[in-house]
Length: 337
Ligand code: SF4
Ligand code: SF4
Ligand code: FES
Image (cartoon, rainbow, N blue to C red; front, side):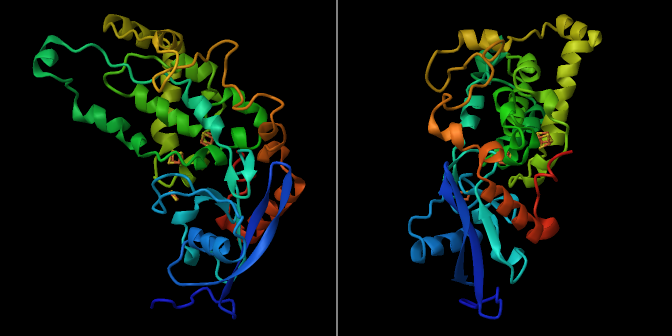
């Protein structure tokens, strides 16, 4: 029934506990809003902005679960605000909304996710093999449908970075960011590695510069993915198998030689790529690694790392919110295997 109040805590109101602050610190602030049927968390955040806190910062675009902008931690669980219905949260209890903990806070619920773009620049893109004479004549490549379908799942990614946020390798260890790509970029590499036409080889890059070995398959990333991509089973585990094959399996090595399936290394791909623009690939081996998105000394990373450097108020309140949310919330302990 339109307009019906369903989240009644006797007074027909809902308490939203929102993180307010910037890279220098902040605190959770409670806003009591009327509860209305059919709303998602983002609706109530918008009502807070419209009525009680016009300066509240929150990032969103589509309100349809497709742009990946509205990622946050709702009752301690990394989620999209636009896809979390209010009536799925514990009735009558305070709803806590905090920014993603793995990234530096810019303001309120908005985080600086540029680390992810730095990682992306270091993954050699698709480099298709030359067409055969038949394909030239036909005017296009020929691929078996079964080969195309394998990586199709990974293209559903909306780059919400919730999987990056929940992954304990960076969530609890800021120092790992310079040597760890994270689940979103493992599926990007898997998508390219499994492409039947691709001629680049990213296995050494994954192992030596992007920290694939640090993933201990806890599956937390798969649990929070709003696109239900089976990140661990379908991307990370097959990538780990490929890395092991490349390094230790002489039969696989011989098979590739016989079938003449040698591929370009990440360095070779980077050397041949343009030096700027969308197709540019930054070298990642040796001393390069994944740099911090902001040079040391700039304010964002110097003080705003949520996991490692955020104010105690955030961590304490976040822990309290997670405890209140019970088993529905993923605490940082839950993410550490
Ligand atoms: S399985 Fe666990 S450790 Fe591996 S990428 Fe996913 S969240 Fe991180
Ligand atoms: S893999 Fe899933 S959780 Fe990770 S960025 Fe893509 S859509 Fe988001
Ligand atoms: S606003 Fe686009 S995914 Fe939520």
